[in-house]
Image (cartoon, rainbow, N blue to C red):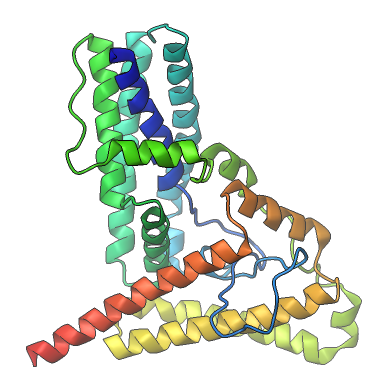
Length: 329
């Protein structure tokens, strides 16, 4: 019975690690991923349709996002190591062996440090005035909510896992799990295979190709398409720069900004669809997009739905803020 209790702790760790790191800001130096499908119902998704450069994979990055790079990088480097170490511990226990006390204490301490870093990062994202950082926080919230989890719940369960490892190392009874966490529900989610695989996602997150080389014949021969692409990039960059002050906008301004973001998403959607249907998107880029989505157990529709949900959460915050303003006045 004791072994089953410990194994449950490490199963929960796998769920927590996979779920809490599903999105990373990356400096993609080209137009990459993601698209809204709010109004565009006449364009169908296909196996050729690569995800467009929106959401967390926008190639135009705000100063606030760039400032978080070092903390993001540290978490990115630590998480795969924790996943491997905890998988190793779980394998030893399943084989009837007790991991060494030194190994357990080392992994437990490292896990606590990672949780503290993650909580600090998520707090900075939530309180930032910058649109892109807030969008990241809402994407994380939306994704965890899909599996009945929360940012606070993930931190609680990971601290409990650390306590379990330390208790095992000291040969004392494990701490009780958090009273507000449904462990059986989390175990059910883990067994269903739905949460994205962290190790696969880390291996697939680098997109090395570009959707266009810039030397395509159509860019040289069709100035309208060339100008449209350059205008899209310019408008997108300016909007991201404007979003640096998103938190200072009044509620109506925030709603207008979200409308502008989604309108830009639709413009990228139409532009990419044209190239996709013409077979002019780079095949390697399309394949890398597919692998990225597959690594998170999502298809294009799932990914778009998630971004739409994140923006809806931001709209709800703006509406709530507006209602509070009217009530106060």
